[in-house]
Length: 500
Image 1 (cartoon, rainbow, N blue to C red):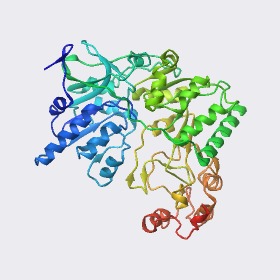
Image 2: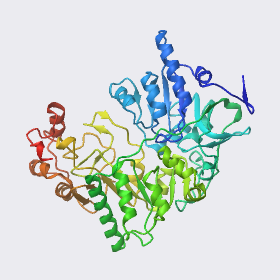
Image 3: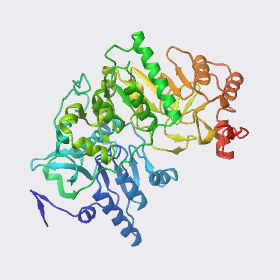
Image 4: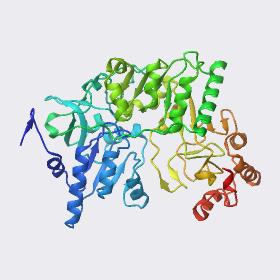
């Protein structure tokens, strides 16, 4: 067997053969960045061989967040029996919704602590992508930090995927620390998005490393579509609102750090902020760094970003690697327990902007489950930012599927972020500022400002007929729109959909 320093050099197939059926395997990867690439494919091939021979082979899989290079091949091979904390692959999603895979949808910052406390049981193997591992156990990670430092510390055995594609200068961005267990957990002395409190590497007991697998390839990250008209309208509403807050003194003149979720609408909002001459140069304290931020940073509008993953397409990652003298000092990569830490988000006064599937008339947000039953992706990091932000903003188009779905509904059948945390709701129709409003006033503001005109009369009538109380609802019809959608294919089947 070949050696990589003191560690055995394994083929992907040799490494896969070490991982038995039923093992809990913690992979690196956050939003598809920094995820293992060679070993998941070998594990999928192993699972197919085992299944063809009539033997079971399914794994308990953990990551930092979603990772196509892990979820797609393993789900296709029916090699996942349990999954946490977040996913976004179509194949895995179908298996979860058919109850073929047990899915634990978890707030991302909580994953390291749950591992530390043993809530998920022991981790049999950690499979971590890196640019280098030293003989004394320093592991230099690639394009995401995620939960990898925790997995390296607590896994019983470790396999390192050395990826030669990535720049070794990523370590200049990395700032890695692991929180100590309660009740002796100290303060996190982080007072600006670019503060550094840790080391450029994660650590592992070298005796736990059972082998090295070599790979050479970029992260599997696709680009986003150009902003459409609805996304641009949403972006304009958000920018106008933030300018109003800035002019009134609610936001200080130097501005506040921003957080933005993943997707086309978030990219449109960030682009609009960059184009506004009245918005001062700003920083971000977020969980992802996306394509749209590269031009903002190079223009000088975005002064710095704290994140846990570089969620950028290969061509844009090449741009960054070619100019690391510029990008490395302006980006800090942190573990997700720090990037999504509620206390730090509160301390810095972050303005959070996330995307909803639907919002009810009182401001409760469903960002994960279609009709309250079928998972799309998961709660991700939205809850940590929404609960602790100085301003929490949710955006979504007012309608979907050609008008057959209204994103503003009487009651959401699933709630990821509730009315007590959601402060602002925005669609292409307008913006509802919910701060200081009671439930009835919230409902009127959301219906009038955010609902599509084709659905406003229905929502107003619902409010009028509902039982009087602090929060008014008609329990006989609160899910009528969702039932119509499931049974008849549209929330209001009698609408003329040619108007949309």
